[in-house]
Image (cartoon, rainbow, N blue to C red; front, side):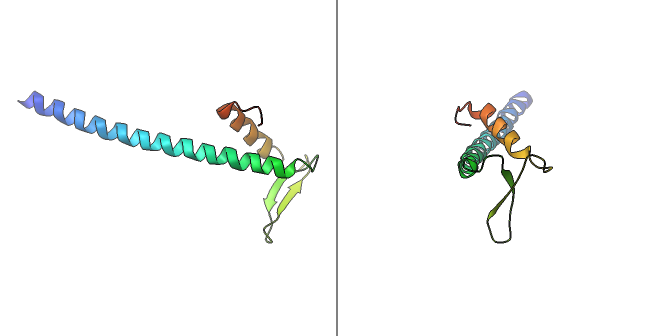
Length: 92
């Protein structure tokens, strides 16, 4: 009887972990999908501004850009690379 109780508790706890893992996986997938959409929107906004990369959003809500020598200049290309690795989308 003792072993039956241990097995039942193990199965119960195992199912809780599995459900939590599925919720977490869904959250991660949704977040990465949103990041992909935002990355594409940013890239489309910058396509006309050759040599400029996103820097920050100003107090007026407008995008500020920088050249390749600003210390954050590699962040956006790195983000695009990670999104490409995740999606394998040639657009990225």
